[in-house]
Image (spheres, rainbow, N blue to C red):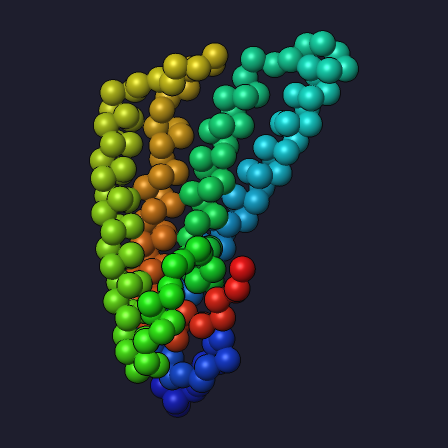
Length: 184
């Protein structure tokens, strides 16, 4: 029986939930966004190297590289954030949670994941409304080469929506948390 088929995740054995296919799609989208983020970071590195070579070896710097790198940084950070949420490797001050008894600790982690998911969802909603406003009004950046602002701001609601969904998935299925927080 498929309901009795067990899933191994983060060293824990659990029965699959009805949401497992949804979680798989969410994880695939998150992994895709993370890979795009890595490619953008590679582009940032290439642009920096190109700008250094053009500026110091050919005495001919570009006008657009600095602005482009700034825009790309926004995209790479917001596309990588859902992966950090999924892996539960974000920076957290969890001394109070760690001091709680084990039976309360799990509930508290679930409540915190739910609250973080709801707050991130609210941020996604608000920034989506602003991005739609920027799209409708066709407001341009005040940079050397003007581009529509929504090209940059679109990554904010996308990133926060994926972060929200990842935290809500952690709240719905706490075994996804893993409990393998990396120590700094």
